[in-house]
Image (cartoon, rainbow, N blue to C red; front, side, top):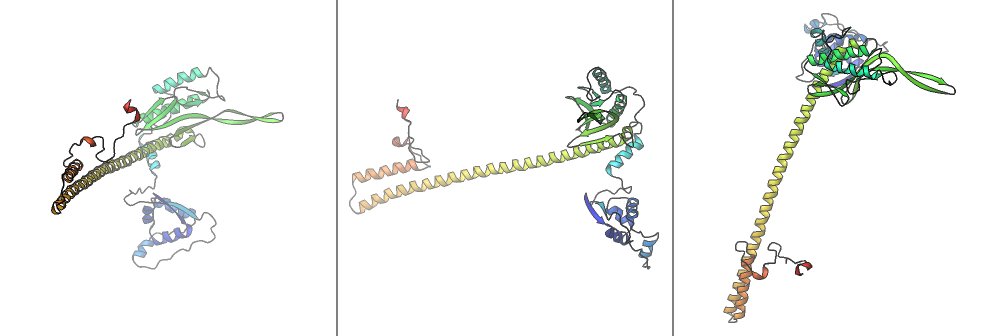
Length: 376
C-alpha cells in the first residue's frame, strides 16, 4: 500500500471538496479517524447538511482555514489499492487481529495469578531453572539452559513462567506450536519459525572506585518479551505490565506468521517460475544446438559430396580431353582411376576404404600422428 504525505492546505481543500466518507475509503481510514486528524491540525470541517445543500445546488458557506495555527503541517495517509477491502472501522490488520483475540479468546490471553496444569515445556524449564539457581548467576539473572529461553532473577521468575506458560498455551490453542531446539525457543506459526524469549531487564549502576568509575548491573524487576525473525521486536513492562500486552504480542506473531508464510510461498512460486523458465530456455537451447550441429553436418557432408563430384568430373574431363587430342596414355588412365578412388573415399555417401588413408582424420583431413613412445 502506498503512503502519501498531505499538507494541511491540501487536507483543507480535500474535506471541502468531497464528503468525509468518500475520503476515508480512498485513504483506508475511518471517517472518524480522518475527522480527528482534521481537528488536530485545526482544519475546519463542513457542518451537518452541507453536502445535501451542495447536491441540491444551494449556496453553502465555506469556513476559511485558520492562519494562526503553528502546529504540525503534514499528515501521512495510506492510499487504498483497487480491489482492497475497506474496513469502515479504520483499524489496521494488526489491530483487527488483536481485537478479535480480545473479543473471542479473552481466557487464552489472560495471565493467571498461579499456573494450573503447566505446559510440559514449562515443567522442564522450571526444573532446569531451579538447578541453575544453585550456580553462579549472570548479573543476578538465571536461565533455563537447553530449555525455554527465559532469563530472570528469582524474584521475577514466577511472573516470567506464568507469562510464558500462558503464551505457549494460547499459541497452541490457536493452531500453532512452540518448540525448543539447540538452546533456542521458537514459536512456529504458519510453518514459519520465530525465536522468542522472556528476559528481565538490567539496571546499570555506576560505582566510584577512587579515581575511576566502574559499572555494575542488577536485575530491575522489569520483564520484556522479544522475538527474532529478520529483525527483533520487543515489548517490556512500562505504563502497562507485560501481561497486559499479551494480546498485542500474539496478534503480532499471528499476523507476522501469515505474512512471512505468504511471502515465502510467493518467493517459492517465483523461484519455481524462474526455474521453469530456465528449464524451458535450456531445453530450447539444447534443441537449437542440436539443430545447428545437424545443419553444420549436412553442410559439411554436402560440401564434401560436391568436392567428390568435382574430383570425378575433373578426372573424366581430363580423360575426355586427352582422348580428343589423341594424347591419352595408360599412365593418365591410372591417374584418373586414382582420383576416382580418392573421391569415393572423400564422398560421405560412399566412404570407400583406403589403405593409405586409414590414419587420416576423415573430417579434418589431418594425419593422426603417433607419439614418439608408440614405436618402442
